[in-house]
Length: 289
Length: 289
Image 1 (cartoon, helix red, strand yellow):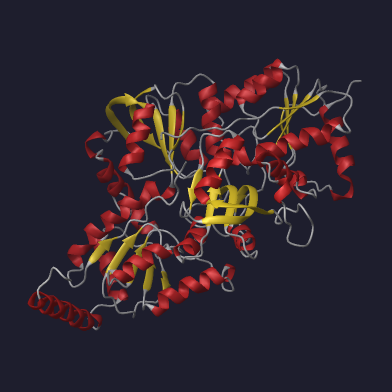
Image 2 (cartoon, rainbow over the protein chains, first blue to last red; image 1 turned 45 degrees about the vertical axis):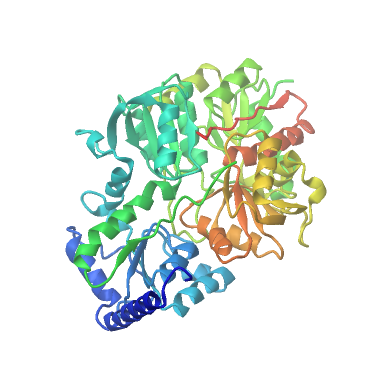
């Protein structure tokens, strides 16, 4: 403040006040229900009404909206950042209350749940999830954001969905690039670091997806966002042991999907002109030593 | 003295006594029960490499925690790993019949007259929990054991009061002691922790709720969360709330292998007909940092 003149300070304070008034005025205008209606109108696929994921988790259609924070996961840190930025609606890709369907029965007496719910209600927040519909979008909203972040749009294989033809590199170098680009400190790898890699394909959370991806002809390396060690890791381990010269890069769930919600913010802002729509990175929470 | 694989399993059942429960999990996964046993190998996962090492050491019965065909349910798996009330991600997996890795493994097992028996549910039900004891021993933490009333060394009673150290130093210490390459850590590196919950293998929501509710517990050391997007944030949220908590994920194999060593010791005490050996499956991954 010492570097600001008194006049500048008064001008800034006035601007803040005006923005605050504007925010209050907007509250009457836009509801969370209207936000959801516009998402449904613009997504370009038949809405999946049966989804148990894509529902309100805190608040509801009538909740007033001052701004939207889009994110991978409704972690408390994301909620804290949203409140600081004046954004009271969270549009999240993943659960809020620690289970896929946000089963309240499992947490209703849990102090961590109560703390989180209390934080949300105290700050007039509304939380709505878009998972199944964002994946069902053509092309998949999550994959689109991920491809953008990786800079791999030009490398997409024309015939094989989820595959890319990269400029040749090594498994070790590719793993480093993935970790750096996705800001992830928990990348795990199987295979020889010096393996030549050009064709890469996505695996998936489920073992069958990784079995199928490992079996794709010409694929040098599979890229997998959260899968289980006891099934997929062991399958890859055995496949390499049969003499197959391939590799696998395992990234966290966050690193695999965070950027898909940055894309949601970019995609939805044009049809939500009255309010700010900002992406808040969940960022891979895991780090290593 | 000649003994069949079924004869060995009969001895195990007898030793376990009235606590033994027939299940779809603890079954012969490969090979014929009437095969003459030349020796027994215990391990986490009966990987192709473990099978090769077993053959090299003249042993043909492998008793493992995991399935030789990677999945935990369906025709070649068994039920462990279901969500507490059946909600959430299902586990109805199936290996494609024509999968080349599956075929190669079946052929190897047949060519070498191997038998794989999965001992999981009944082993887990034993008290004290040898998986927990084995991991505590491997970490050198037995002297820090502080059970919370109830049955000592029960699966949900893995509490230890360590000399206070930061989460980062604790992780470095674990990495060095267990000689591992990949470790994933959550929480603020400089947070000082002392009371730790140790939980080998996979944790579900009800596990983390129970363990973190223990007074004074700030750190969970486990294999991995069943799902990062569902149960991982439980501890992240408490850390974001300033509660000084963290989690260190050491991996499924790393966290469960010491208990498989305990199994070999246990078997040696009453199986005298054939030699028994523990062969570690080994850590599956490396990290690009």
